[in-house]
Image 1 (spheres, helix red, strand yellow):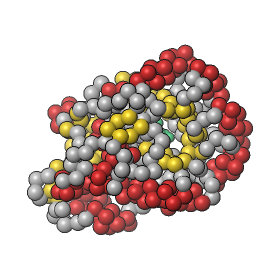
Image 2: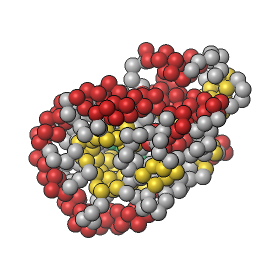
Image 3: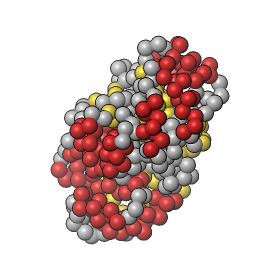
Image 4: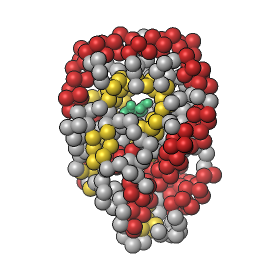
Length: 368
Ligand code: OSB
Ligand code: MG
């Protein structure tokens, strides 16, 4: 495909409530949206899911814009490239995975229109529906949180993920487990524990959790491997896995039994497919995480979650939960059994609302 134009949109979507995690609070959602147009007039939308501050990963909205504008998108200008060739070509750029993913996803949308197949089909996805879980931020009032858990379970979500941090873990999980003896519960620490706090994690073993997500440092696998030996509960890595090589090494040393794959964090859908292969060969369970993306990012997360090893419920929530308004329509429809359909049509699978992008626009950059 030949790309004739590339634009970046920085928008800010107001959130209905602030989302609190072990790394801090998200009060509004900045988003980096990429729009490519092919020489044949096909449009591809992509999203780089960076937060405004480098608190989850090192990238931010502004670093994504910089890397996309200066190093990634100019290389597409009037070239006839396959997606895998292009991703290999930009492999000289160290990390900056969210930026790479934003460009790659826009290319997939165009490729999918050229091939008249959905992105899921192009990737070799086998699932027609994806099971969903819900991620619940840290709240001061446990009764309020219990009420929210009830609401989410009634809506159909198959798993509840509780954000924890030191001093805000055992009592919270106990309260939810006592009320719901049989549901799937996981916890996500977003790197807020250190290795000398392993006993805090061991205390959670009694609750039969599905997993403990990323207790230790964002770049660690050694301490996680040590902890996995001492814990009954499976460790799931999120922040620590930024590539298929990271996944291979973490699995090899026993640092996790489960991986939360965010296609953005690992640098795109091709890399996601590689992790799917590694998981298949090693019996590692996968699920697709989320980062409060707009509907554009979510569409590609759903395509990723249709891959064979993504058997556990995904953090892919209808936009109306978090945002007053999204830049795509229709919103995701959660079925009564807690699943969402994988779009089967070519392209993004959702309509992009240019007027809504304009409404929340901070800046627009025409790269070429
Ligand atoms: O650790 O999974 C995480 C949001 C932003 C950054 C990191 C994380 C999250 C979430 C949100 O947990 C889950 C969602 O998008 O539904
Ligand atoms: Mg996480």
